Length: 252
Ligand SMILES: Cc1cc2nc3c(=O)[nH]c(=O)nc-3n(C[C@H](O)[C@H](O)[C@H](O)COP(=O)(O)O)c2cc1C
Picture 1 (cartoon, helix red, strand yellow):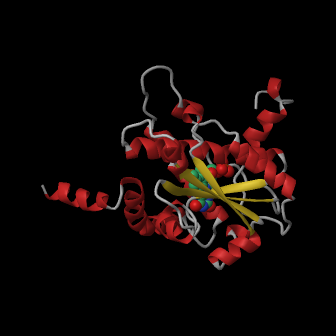
Picture 2 (cartoon, rainbow, N blue to C red):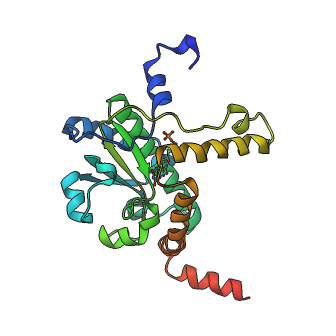
Picture 3 (cartoon, helix red, strand yellow):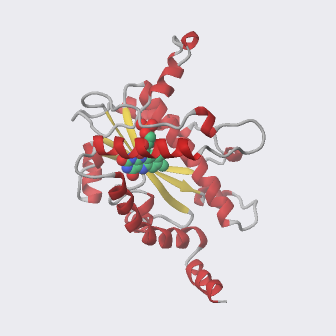
């Protein structure tokens, strides 16, 4: 952080946020959890459409629903749903455009999730966003549709788990340097050497934090679930006919 901005507490909260995966066994007080949810409710959204819903869980209610503890034994979880069901019922101003609609809903719901994590951080509560929890993330959208009785146009995108951190903070994972990701004017690609160095750091960092696994093994695990998730999401976003029309197009 630039020395001139050292005293800025809000900036410090944003820049020091880290995903945390180890929690003490202490619940989050109701007023603190309510403030976190409020940060989600007040997030910005396209045309203020607020295309999100939040399914909230305590350790007990999660255990009851999923027959297992919240990931990383966190005391609270919020499942973030991209939701255009509610707003569609209020008005139907736009032509049928599932891809645009879904993109907008995912974008807005993600911003709500981010607002929650920043608010949590300001209150001393750590969190991690999860798309793969073995039962409750983006990759389990089809399963969750049934489990939570989700209507059409409501798609789970991630679960955020919240709690008080245990142990020392994990070091910052390798972030790309400023010049690799921002540019003025026309698009500028990133030097392959920068990407190579970053990938090597990613692999080493993963190995250090998961001695029994590897980044490759983790990506392999995701890959094994992506086919099912792709089919489920296509059906949820484009309707049940989506897959058969894709197949037909491919045959032409
Ligand atoms: C949409 C989204 C999904 C994520 N899914 C997972 C996940 O399934 N499992 C996990 O351990 N971390 C997950 N993460 C956390 C990322 O691994 C983490 O943000 C990244 O490594 C950068 O670390 P940092 O948040 O500490 O900056 C996810 C993050 C985002 C934004």
